[in-house]
Amino acid sequence: MILTKKQETQISKRLEELTVLKEKLPELVNDLFWDYQRMSSSGKETLDKIAVLVGVPTDEEIEKASKETT
Image 1 (cartoon, rainbow, N blue to C red):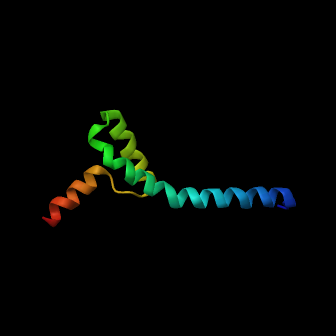
Image 2 (image 1 turned 180 degrees about the vertical axis):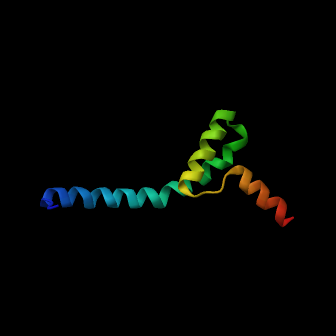
Image 3 (image 1 turned 90 degrees about the horizontal axis):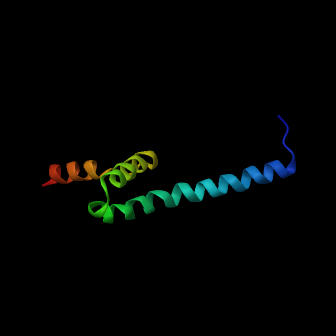
């Protein structure tokens, strides 16, 4: 498969965007957990699903780890 220069540039730009997203998204998900107790049950469920996708511990995993260390 031969790519044009324009296609290579577009792919390169998109890879850079995805790299930034991969770096920043886990931090943003962690920030959302500060409001976890105020979220609706569906909001909590959605946040937990997103956390799993980006490799951030869910609220349940954090609670479990906290109990194991005390």
